[in-house]
Each structure stands twice: as C-alpha cells, then as structure tokens.
Amino acid sequence: MSYTFSNEPIALMKYHLLINYDDFIFISSKKPSKKHKINAEQDHSNRITYINELCLFNTNSSETFTGKNKAFPVAMEFFHEKDSHSKKDFKNHEIDSPVLCYVDKTIERYLPEDGKFIESIIGDSKFIKDLKIPENNLGELMDIKYFIDSDFKKLYEKYKEIIESNKKKQINKEFENKNRKDFMNLDNNEIIPVQKSDKTITDENKLETLEDFENAYLVNGYFVYPDSLPIHEHAVGEKPKPISKGERDYLEKYSSIFEEARREHLRLKKKLK
Image 1: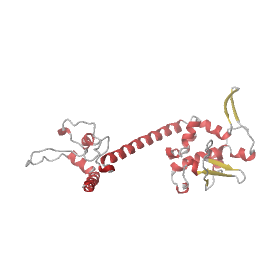
Image 2 (image 1 turned 180 degrees about the vertical axis):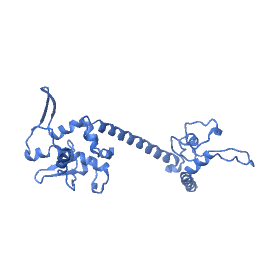
Image 3 (image 1 turned 90 degrees about the vertical axis):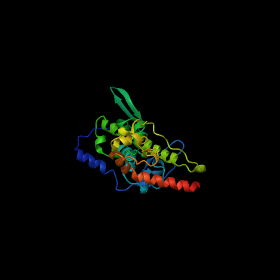
Image 4 (image 1 turned 135 degrees about the horizontal axis):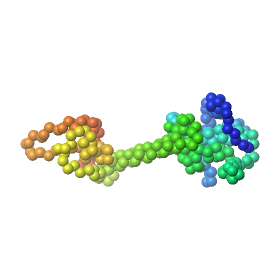
C-alpha cells in the first residue's frame, strides 16, 4: 500500500471526495467496552459507515441535532473512516497492513492503519481526539481553508481561539450561576449575602459617564442586586440632588435586571414570613 500526491484539478479532487459522502447518515447505538470506544465503524458487507451516537454524543437522540458544532465531529469521523482507509478495508478486508513511513531511510511513523496515518499528518493523536469531542463546539472549523495549508497553521490558530472563547464563556456562566445562587439560596430558608465588589469608590462625584458607573458598581462585569445600585445619602427632609446623566444612563440600561431582582427579593421576603 502506498500514497501519492495527485496533480488533478482541485474541482475534480473535491468531486471525488464528495461522492464518498451520502445525503444521509446511518446511526448505531453501541455502548463502549472497557477497552474500546468506537465512535464510527464500517459495515463491510453493506459498504456502509455508521456513526455510533452513544459513544460520540453519549445520547440516543442525535437525530435531533442541528448546526455545525454537532456536524463537525461527525465530519471528522467520516474523514477517518471514509476518506482515509475505507477503500483499502473493502478491498483487503481482515488483512493487517500497518503503515510505515520512511524519511531518509529512517522509520518516521508506524501506525496500524492508514486512517490514523492520514490524521497524523494534521496533528498528534491528542489533537485529533480533541477535534472529535462534541463539547468543544468546533463548528467554525467546518471550512476547507483550515485543512488545505501545508502546516495547518490556520487550523491550530482557530482551534486555540475557539477553545479560549469556550473557556471564557464557561467561566462567565459559572460566575453568573454562582451570583444567582449567592443572591438567593432558599435551602433552609436562609438568605445568603451576595459577593461584594473589590472596587472601592473613593469619590462618587467623579463618576460622570455610563462607563464610570459600570466600572464602579458592576461586580466583575455583572449587575448584582443590590450591590450594583448607586446609593445617595441625604438628611431627613433634605431634597436629593439630581442624578447625573451617566447614572441615569446606567439605571436605564440595567432597569429590566433591577426590576426582576427586586420582584424576586419581595417574593422571597413574603415566603420567609
């Protein structure tokens, strides 16, 4: 078995690749064994490639999935099964033919199957495995431009960008959930105080713009009731000073959040009575 680089036009090569893909996907549902987790496999008798939804997505309802984030891991499995070693397997079924790659008479790669050999050109086994994890939400990589570079630099850069973005979203989500839990914890009918902002307001008269008030009152970028509400002190009978345009803009921007938090606060007080 050997590999050659084709001089055929790109359009013809794309056509040859596309004819390997059907307009439908066969789904199987097999639990992983203790030693093996098979996300996709070929039925040699029927020349069909199956996606094992239970291993790949940990679900029995993958037919309801939509979007590129779910399609990308399936595409990666097809790349391994259909574009890499399917032809060899159908012609040499149950014949062990490991791959040897020589560079200057030295064995560069030794892999038990050509599917893994093709993937190894893109990256190491850990990187390929990460590309197939649905939870990584790598749908943006469903673009041919990331797979036609000689060094796959664009693919790695975009992958890192997506992973970092996912981490930030997860941190923000966890922080938001923590704020909600800290704001109102109904277990044992106790009120848990919210997290306080680390920012110290030295002179509120210097707060002029909307951004000034956001920097001063938001807790790590989030509106937390009641910490995020500006407080003005004045003597009994004294008329409050008019608020600045920046504070007015700030209150208007977060008015819906304030009202929702205020209603929830009143509801909790009634429940605790």
